[in-house]
Length: 179
Image (cartoon, rainbow, N blue to C red; front, side, top):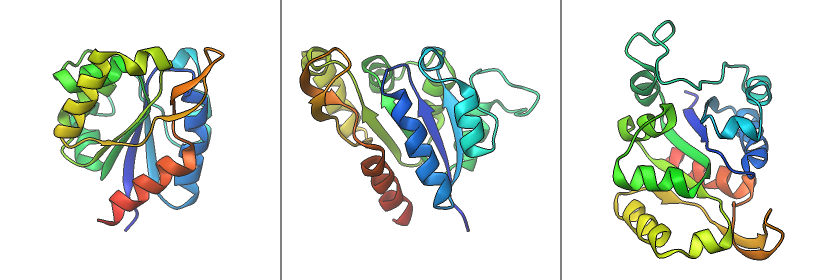
């Protein structure tokens, strides 16, 4: 039986790398549905992920036509795993504090299976005490974090905050799907 996962894309420049992650997972036989935040769509268009998955990209909390119970409920019940890449500081704060104001954050609250987060942000943001408190809360709550790594950042400096490479995230997803 093929695995079904949801890949959430939040609004960071690293969203372009998520296309390679989705392609890798689809090529290995994983069924992938993509959920994008409004901010994510400023970096990569839904058409990219639709082409890679052969599925409609979901962006709205209220999609009663295709999901009578709401996409956050039905996707949570259908998927084996939820992966968010990139996971911005904002998205991680929402998840750490149980806040939900869009489809992706609502889905995180509804999802009962493994959740993988691939943090990506500026190094000063990553080092903030509030972000580190959220990271500890997420780990304590059972979220699986992959990265971030140190490297060249879009803010034109080197530091911690670079999203893990797509192959590293895909390997973590596959490992969790096997357990």
